[in-house]
Image 1: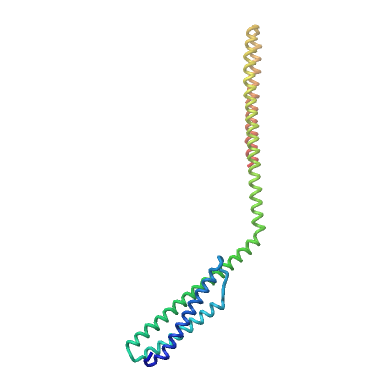
Image 2 (image 1 turned 120 degrees about the vertical axis):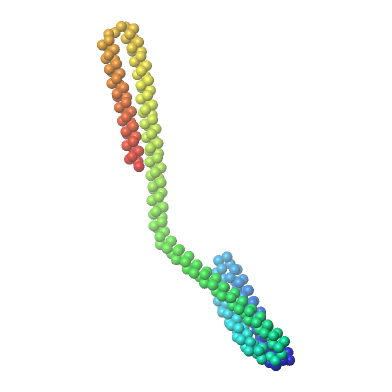
Length: 226
C-alpha cells in the first residue's frame, strides 16, 4: 500500500492477523481439552501460557500500529487503518477475556478437588464414629421391636386371663342358679341360702381382685419396657 508508513503498518497488521488466527486456534484447543472428560481434569499448562504470550504480543503490535496509523497523511487511509487496528485490538481483548475465564474455571476445579480431598479425609477419619452411631441406632431399633413384641404378648396374656375370668363368672352364675333351683325344690332353710349367697359374694370379690391385679401387672410391664 503506497502511503507514508504504509509498508511497515501493513507488515505489523499481517503479523497481528496471523497471531489472531493462532490464538483463536489455541483457545479452541484449550476448550476441547477442558471438556474432553466429564471431570475436566485434562489440561495443558504449556498451551495456556503460549496463548497468553500470543495475546500479549498482539496487544504490543496494536500499540505499535496505533502510533503508525496516526502518521498516515491521507485521511481516508488513516480512518481505514484506525478501524483495522481497533478491530485487531477488540479481538485481542476478547481472547484475553476468554483466557481469563478459562483460568478461572481451572482455579475453581482445583479448589473443588481440594475440598473433596479434605471432605474425604474427614470422612475416613470419622468413619468409625459414624459406624458406631449406626450400630447404636440399630440396637435401639431392635430394642424397640423387642419391647413392642413383649408388650403385644403381655396384652394378649392379660386379655386371655380376663376372658377366662369372664367364662368362670358365667359358669358360676349358671351353677348358682342351678343350686338355688335345687335348694328351692328341696325346701332347704333360709340359713343355707344365706351361706350360699355369702360365698357367692366372696367369689365375686376374688374375681374382681384378680382382674385388678392383672391390670396392675400389665401397666407395670408397660412402664418397665419404656
